[in-house]
Length: 303
Image 1 (cartoon, rainbow, N blue to C red):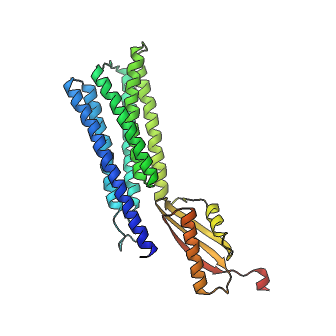
Image 2 (image 1 turned 90 degrees about the vertical axis):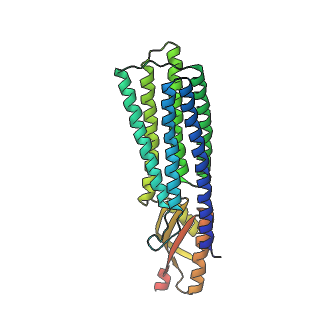
């Protein structure tokens, strides 16, 4: 079995792990949403029931993630010789768009409440439910972000940011209730809503920034890092035209190196493989390297 086949198997296993995490998070989010809706119905709390319906949006982002990962894990074919991995980034953009929409919705609600104040009231049961769901969501987003970094999965990291937005909203509601109970004016509620919307806008911006950077083939690593690795090989006299793109889960690097013109094809071929393995070892294991070999003529040889 060659290196390319091993990388395909490794990538497939990685996607399976990401899918498993998404399924676990989906069931957790649905459990939180259903709990809010049922408790809201039992105590006739329309606000808690509405919050439960909103929590279903977290489950929707999980579904988007599962669809994106399913498409991204499709093997290479004639029309997609580089594979379908960028569909994971496309799915991240959808989650970013969902966050953007949520941010505008909260901003609109907050501004509207300046002119149409709403009296906040909550029972002990709904308050306990709110605190419990915040704890569950904190555990969910922490676990998902940790696994996202472990598997280099943009979809898990983006989805954890979406779940984090639900935490911010719930904490905002909790803070509003507490400070109003302490005697502060009701206007504090829309102010907190607007502040939360700004945090959500920033989270959406970060997702768009990272995702669009990958889709537009932004350089993923510094040239100096590649030069440092390649220059460790004494056979390489010069290196130029260095390019990189992709992500830490699917990186592509190409370059031109200059070597002694007397080096035969077999030796130069072996050298390029050693350089590729060193880049995978020192920079990124999920890296495909293309090296163009050129002859190097020093001034002494030219004379």
